[in-house]
Length: 379
Image (tube, rainbow, N blue to C red; front, side, top):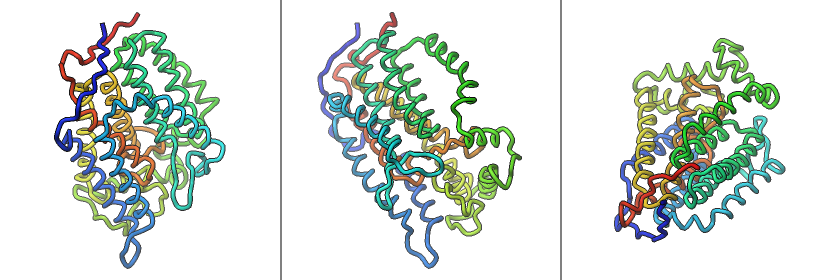
């Protein structure tokens, strides 16, 4: 029998909840702000407009982080449907009236600020699925409903198109289903079916620019002054950083003139500025986030907390893994930002909310260890 105890457990009377997680997030944000300031600082001193907007987003994110960490995460269950429908509505609306940039329609632009609904849609989907799954055993009918809940926003994001965010949602679905105790034979069967359709999907639905990205990934020497130029410069930037980097200044940077240097290829930017030491600090911080996120899931007060922690950890760590893989040419370019670091307010604020919710889960423990969920049958 699966325990369905709904007792709200008071938060511990202490601030923080998980010092390792706080230090890891703070370290990543600090490196990101320093890096951005170095490459955008105007001649003669001062701060750039990009840095002002990033700091403004950081202030909002800090408030959201503290608020999310202090509020009982279980209150989200009462708003799950509203959150999900709001996220879907925003994803539909951006396809109609959103601003188109770089061949994609992903943003609402208001003055000098932009809002990316897909970032919020990923989080609201994870919250909704965690709430739904926590009240049910892992059985085929519920599994189908959960898969549909993930499929709708994933397809809408893919239409924008935003392949990177779609892959992150697929990863969140997979990790949450594993945590929900769906048999591996079921997941492997679905994975086989998806792989079988990849050639057809590539032929009919993959845009030309994404095909070119894949071609450049498979052939590093392809079109070095055209489609392959960016990745070649990324390689040069990472190599020129050495162990300790060339310094924060943008003078003489191999990435000079690249529009995506502080977003899609910010790891290369940090590698050039701070060298191997800086990139290892970033990688280590994300490893700590993964460790603490899964540890928080393992000690959560209830099923909702377990599934929510697993989903949020995936949203924070998998984009980092993909971003790093793209920058070191282990994965085709997907246009995915590095959480807490890349230029962009929506991703930064949502990442801060996610980290805050992890702390909220960490701050609450079950009154009795036997009330933790240990799994359910698949029938």
